[in-house]
Length: 129
Image 1 (tube, rainbow, N blue to C red):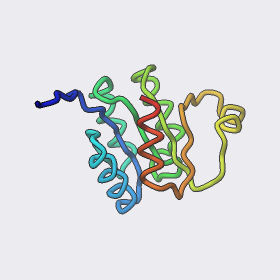
Image 2 (cartoon, rainbow, N blue to C red):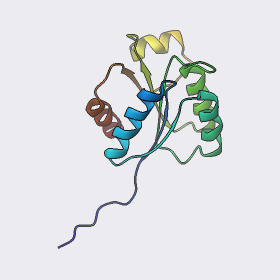
Image 3 (cartoon, rainbow, N blue to C red):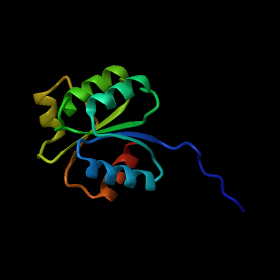
Image 4 (tube, helix red, strand yellow):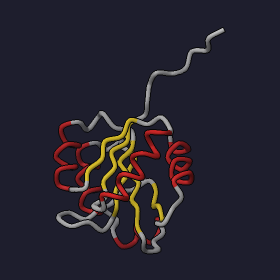
């Protein structure tokens, strides 16, 4: 007997200016069944997202990046798609409540502390869906 599985793969846009980190995250998510598009340039990522704003279920972005930081990126992504789930990653300890006090104009769904195991990241993303 063949069991039918859902053919709808969840799609994630990942932005991290460190190519090695991006490659690891992208590979881990793909192995877990996600469609993944990755960028090391936040400005190019935003241009892509604005053209494909309904193609993604989650945006996962580092906070500290050259060109456009994760906060500005998240605001711009939210402007293009108010329903998208946005996860920000940081190596600095920051809680969601702190973020909301400091930057109330940035609505994010999750703050992920680096370093994070890829298993934990995948689980966090899966639970949000």
